[in-house]
Image 1 (cartoon, rainbow, N blue to C red):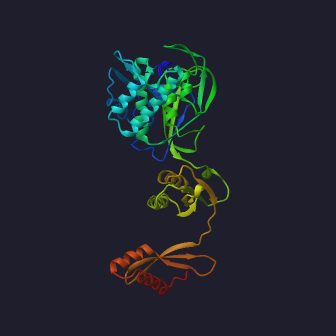
Image 2: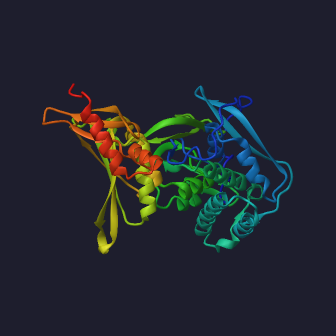
Image 3: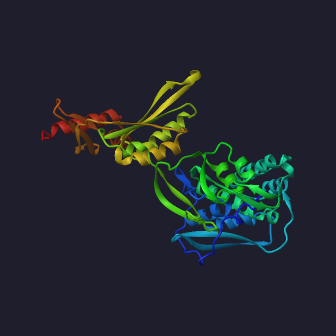
Length: 425
């Protein structure tokens, strides 16, 4: 590797033991966004430290690493501060000589390890991106790429630790544009320009921004991790922050705190922040890969999340594909919850949101006594003609089953009971 992936370029002294914090449960990120706010760049150790600071239990990292046949190192988790911001630091302390490991060796090691499938998938994808970047930089076959720095132990810890934490959370990863420092760095292969060649290769397709700072802000391992996991890149996504974590580097920067900030939160659709007309929001998406069972389940979940109504409309999409429009009419106060359900329970990758106004009759439930028990009747009044009266069907159906009569008999009895009482108010 052209540079020490994580601890040659980020550093200042630790301030003590990490402060205990509330731990996140497995799956705490499902349906949510995990935003990598890389204002000072990103490195592998900073990523794992920030995930631990966010609330992922350390046992997640230790458990994943314990499955690997790699020994002779320890992890030091410490509390650090940068410009008075408290953060978590991670240091890999190698206590014995390590063999030189190639990409092929490490990939075989990961493939054989009893890691959970998602962690294994993410770790192998990250190492492949890192290996391909090194191979491109050195113009050599992928299988022969060597991870020189202490036998690749740092990279193994950072890549597998990050993969285990991200698999544990299950969130969608969004990454900010990455700041590129300038200058040169001394590495095993000699003096290299910054950003390092492998970093640039790792970041193909990722947005980067220039920073007037002589420092390595994005390391190859950090670049491989974010590029392998990012669903998209944004300066700041629309989200409601719930948990925040800071991972500290080990080098003091001249113009900014050397931290990586992670923010876990619910997606927040922009329409909820708009002012103006509209009592409700209509949220909809076209899908051509959902079964009828999944669509029915999604409609029920949308209603449970607070939608006032939810429906599916058959449509024909491009190339003549039969599809559905899944839609929900939602009070503004419930938009965030309904959007979360839309994105987790349907196969859509995007939504349309329209502010709408709903005109409603006033409603009330009236209990009436019938031969089949007391039943609720919904009465809707307005200044536009007589009230609409409708017995609650589910309760009437249950009463019909209980008394072994047709449901229409119970409905008629409920209407007759309502009409027979004084409900003119």
